[in-house]
Amino acid sequence: MDLSLLYYSVQWLAGLIAFVTIWGWMPLDNWWVRGVEFPRIQIMVLGVIAWIGMLAFWPNWQLGQWLLFIVLSVTLAFQLRMVLPYTKLWKKEVQEAKDTPEGASYQLKIMVSNVLTPNDETQKLVDLVKQKQPDILITLESDKKWERALHQIEPDYPYTVKVPLDNLYGMHLYSKLELIDPEVKYLMIDDIPSIHTQLRLQSGRVIWLYCLHPMPPSPTEADKSTTRDAELLMVGKHIKENEQTAILAGDLNDVAWSKTTRRFQRISGLLDPRIGRHFINTFHANYPFLRWALDHIFHSACFTVVDIQRMPSIGSDHFPVMTTLQYAPEEANQQEQNAPTAAAEDSKETESKIEEGKKEGEKVSKEHADVQRGLG
Image (cartoon, rainbow, N blue to C red; front, top):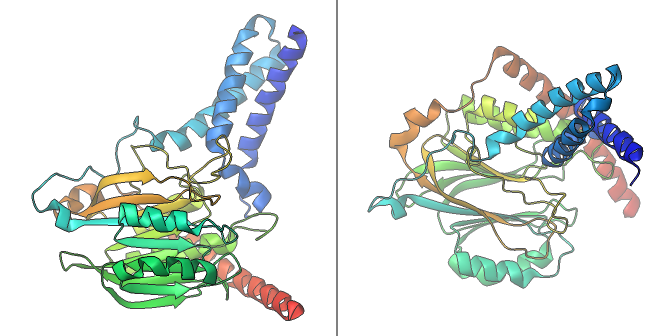
């Protein structure tokens, strides 16, 4: 192979990695900016290849190559800082659950599964639920077809909230544990639901559970991330202001290292059980190199982690994920020290983002209504 071609290809890759990283720093909500927050693992891998490749040609460097290498190193360090917390090299944000005789009665298994509405392999999820026996099952993108299929599990799940929709935002909640006053709310957009409910644990303790699936920024759905960001921050603010013991779960159409999700953690005080453990990359199930974590669970400091696993494919573009938590109020004080804290700027930005989200939500709701009238 022509070494000069390889030399220039490595520089081109280095320049691309640096450009994409800096591009993502722009303070804009447009999908073509916020989208680069998703593939940080992939960007980092390609950046390391470019970094090593440039070193291989070090004797040939001129001033331009030195500058490029410095910029690449800075941007690569930034990507590493975003990704590293989701590895075992980082301090755990949530402690391992202690093995005690009464521990099992304080445990809670939650499975989150974006089923993909057109997916007809419904029995795979039914079989998985019967095998794993989660206490809580949250399905996203579930319509009437999925509701009929999941009727098989209802003898084991007496508490349900069903919101079947054919717009890719249907949502179902199945629970073995008592749901108290569950509500379906439409926080930002009139046809995109979320479920808010209290949940009585086996121990008798009542907590809050929030199930979310906001609209993602993409060329085919939302031009901006504004409503997604606002919905997440609105719920986080509500949890903090009401001092709730809470779990928030769902397909957030965002990654854990995005500026919005990190601000959500600071605003809500909820913890991420993946920090200090490993990636739980749930999307895209069909493309191993193009995967990142879209399905999340965050929780109050009074929970510790028993286990968190990605489940086998059910034919969707998302893998299901199951998290087992243990209610351990004695660990709350220590774990609260691990929770990120909000600054004055976070509160100000949250208020601003929520107001922007409401305005954008009204606009999107009107557009969706116009489309439905046109189809009718």
